Image 1 (cartoon, helix red, strand yellow):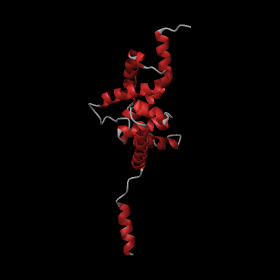
Image 2: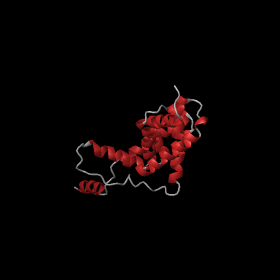
Image 3: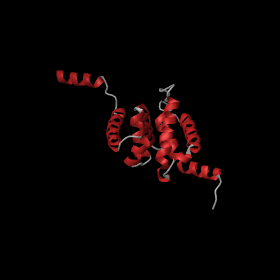
Image 4: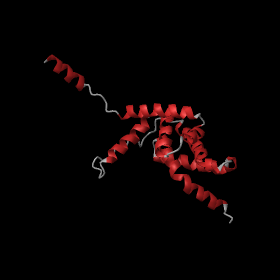
Length: 175
């Protein structure tokens, strides 16, 4: 059966849009910027689709294109993480919502190289070999970035140390 170029493109978008949008949003910190990035990604990828030799590697190939597009969008204004600092409703119905928002906020504070490996590994369930291909780095580098990214995320999610705690400890020692 023959498919038109338009139907092949639409199928491609249906298969990969959510993955790319999630990844772009995590990388940029803004849904609006992420949507622009994904549109640019699909435009560029479709234009150069003959370069994709193995269709099973399409996701990694598209991620690589999306990542470059995200970096171009962020280059002039690397501190435009407006959604990361958005105020959320504390009276949300699901108590786990605050935890999810904390993770998203913490991810937004990480360096892009740490954010992207965490997003690919945990949000998109991409194997390390595909991550290495998508990021154009070795599998060993992926693993070391994952370790550093986990440590950075742990630090970003740790509660800030209060200056009052050492004062209380000092007061107790005097007693």
